[in-house]
Amino acid sequence: MKKYVCDLCGYEYDPAVGDPDNGISPGTAFEDLPEDWVCPVCGAGKDSFSEV
Image (tube, rainbow, N blue to C red; front, side):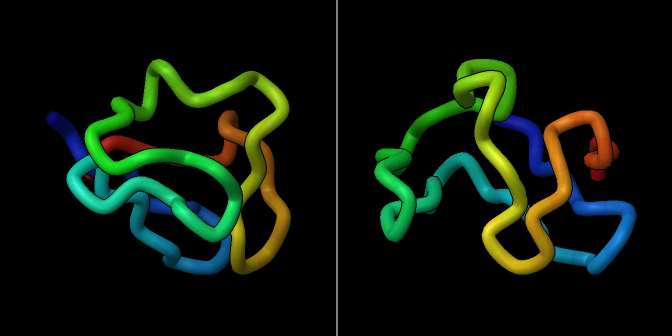
């Protein structure tokens, strides 16, 4: 699965890790994140992420 990085703060979303602090299980692809998911560091929306 592809990793994505926040263009604003540099946070990297790794699907192998997920975002457990925000209810996203490991193994969740970026494309499968809820539309209202935001960067856990700066609060940017999914549209502010670029594929690594």
